[in-house]
Length: 60
Image (cartoon, rainbow, N blue to C red; front, side):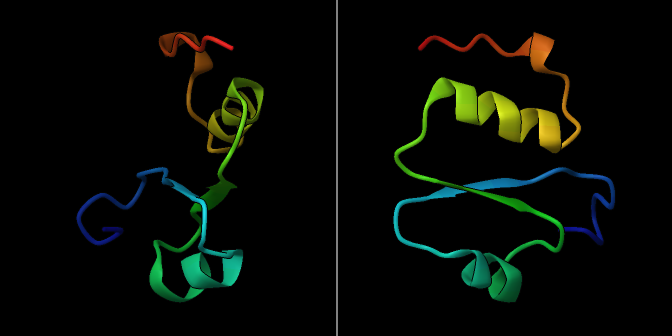
């Protein structure tokens, strides 16, 4: 993925995978948000990924 889009920001969500799984098999530098998560936690992950939160509508 990074070869095609080097600046892409990735947020994985999983109810089973651990951070070591994303490190080993995922996109380097990706964030992992474990399920279940709240809209607030998603908002934090989006912000940490450097994405603009104002394009998202989050309903709690």
